[in-house]
Image (cartoon, rainbow, N blue to C red; front, top):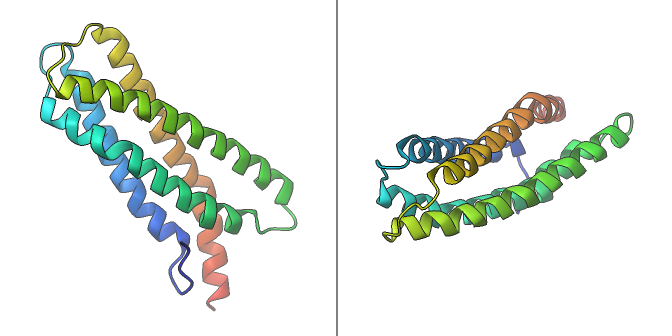
Length: 154
């Protein structure tokens, strides 16, 4: 899964982040349209891509990014605790994504939104958590991996 070479794991994850952020924007549009302006096609598109995207990106992070991040004798304990927290977030995100997928599929196939407040809360909780997770990786993990990558290629 990890390709050796001159590309840092951050490059691959960065592309995944952009896709996730686009989905977050779609989820926010869906939430903003509740209860009467629902784009059922968008619901179906997001529902069909969300879980596979998360599973693929999480698998890559856990097999490539996390080991590279943990590879530091001085800060190893701190980094292992960080990785454990991020792994827990991955599990929580995938469970929430499955619940969202079920709800969005139902709506996309014409079912009414019976509780728009609850669905809006569920959507917003998910995309805000996703944005926070991405921000953490970009602010705390990427700089370390990018610096290490640059040092190894000098």
